[in-house]
Structures are given as structure tokens and as C-alpha cells.
Length: 141
Image (cartoon, rainbow, N blue to C red; front, side):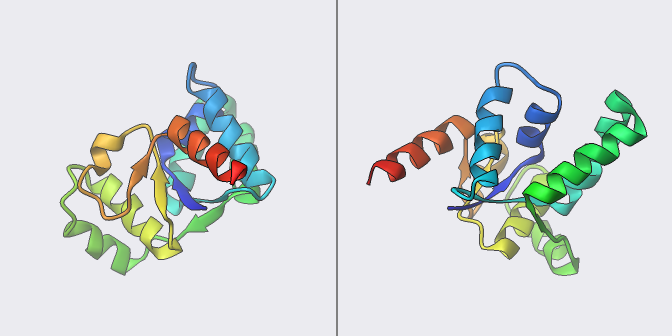
């Protein structure tokens, strides 16, 4: 399954945010072992660096970004994505940009804890716990 991880799910792992970190880490492991095709938006990378630098310093932030770049494909944000995001019926422009980046990767879903932000999106939003359940069910088939 091809999915794009929203920034909030990446931050759950990075900042070890309970109770969400364990589920997000399990999804990261599924990406790492090839059972899940995962990408992150290019804007997520810069956001992660900014937040990680405040928490772990510049060197720690660079290491976090290296880990992410080694694990995930990066969904590009170009002029078409930025323009397309303006026309989506989503309440937040940043979420709309993430949606358009996901479209560019052919993502089947956006993994997020902010499903309301993607309520009117063409690409469905899926909660991390729900995605784990879907993957478990598919594994039994």
C-alpha cells in the first residue's frame, strides 16, 4: 500500500509523543521492511528539521533528517502542487499542499491524526491505528 505520512505522525516518533509514538513507530518499521510504501512531503522535512533543532540541536536535527530521508520517499512540492492546493476544499492550506504532494506520489491514503483536516480530500485520510488494522487484515488474506 502506498501512503504519505502527515507531519504529525512523523513528529509522534521524533518527539516520542505518548500514546501515539508506538503506533507510528510500528508503521515506520513496516516501511523499513518493505511491507508499506511510505513517503513524506518535502515540507515535512523542513518542519522536522526546525522542530528537531530546537529539541536536539542542529547536529541532532541533521541526524533525524538523514534517518527520514533514508526511510521515506520524498513527495515533491512544485508549482502545480501549490496551485492545485488553492482549489481544494480543505480548511488548511498546509494540509492541501500535503494532499497535492500525496497525489503526485500516487498515494492511496494520507496517514494522519488530523482526519478532520482532510475531510473533503480526494485522497482518503487514515488514522495510524486504522492503517495498522488494514495491514494486519491484508496480511491474513
